[in-house]
Every structure is written in structure tokens, then in C-alpha cells.
Image (tube, one colour):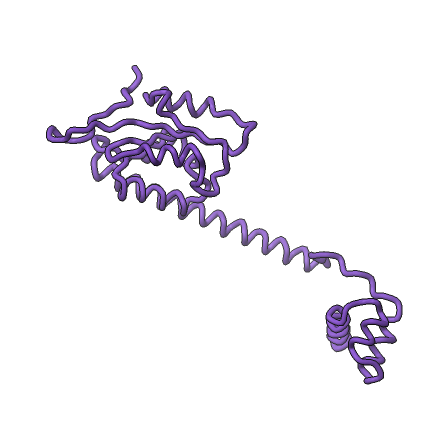
Length: 219
């Protein structure tokens, strides 16, 4: 039996019932929202209260998400299929989660992760505390993974450099006459500008090549 999208979350003295809203998101227009929407309908969110975007999760400036935020009121419930439908950065998700649950008094339910359910009546403050703790743990794991990726990249670059692999743009071939111009510059027979002009390059590039050549000779 499908849950009702309206849930009395207050006490006998409250005059307003909370309303369940759903949010679905995919990153590109050729992706399909049906699986998420079916899950939200199965939870009991009414179809007209489901908002969806086909947009990147890099931030929360998405048209339907912003319309949903204008609709949400204290005691309402926001339902998503998975936590990454809110966004792709756990730091941003945690901040948005805090804004929704603490500042606006909205409950959040993540269908794929039952522990992420802050509704009153689902454990009260304990449920909210556990949800916050799980989010912090997810953020920590995500940071560990980012650090691990950066470390593997650094180790891969170091190993490649040890094998003689060079990174960056290939250096232009030394122009004909560079050595003669360099020697003339170093001996004072030509200025830096004149030597660079003789090689057909800018003075900045000529001076950089002179420095690199000097360092190479010193090594």
C-alpha cells in the first residue's frame, strides 16, 4: 500500500500537516528520469509535487530545484532517490542539508539509504542525529577517495618522469643561430633584444632559453 504524501508530523496543537515533495535529477538531457520518478511515486509523493532537472549537480542553481525551494515550508518532507541527486559535492550537500533541516525545518528522506531520514516519528532527534552522522561519514570517505586519487596521480607522474617521460607542451626546436646569438649576448657583443631578434623570437623566450642552457651546462 502506497504511503500518503501528507504526514501529520506535529502535535495535537499544530494546525498544519507536512507535505511530501520529490526531487529527481539527471546530468544530461539524454538521460532518463523515469527510475527516480517511479521510486518517488512508490514512496507516496503525488506526481504534481515531483520536481525534476536535467542539469549538472555542481551547484544548486537549477530551475526546478529553485522552484521546489520556494514551495517548501516547515514540516514538509523532501524525498530523493539517492543522495547524489541533490548534488555531486558532499561538502555542498552537507551545507544544503543543514539549511533544509536546521534553518527551514524541512525533513529529508533518501530512499536508497534508510539511515538518511530525518522525519519526526522516524526516531525523532535520534533519527536526525544519525542522518547527520552518516552524512559526515560519507563526506569523510569522499575526501579520502579524492586524496587517494591525487596521491595515485602524483605517484604515476613521478614514475613516468623517472622513466624519462616529459609532460607539458613539447618545446620548440632551437632556431638556427641560437648558439651564436647566445654566445654574442653572453660576451656582451649583442644586447638581449638584438640577440632575440636575430633568432626570430621574443626577448622573454630568448632569455628563458639562455637561462635553461646555462643551467644545463652547469649540470
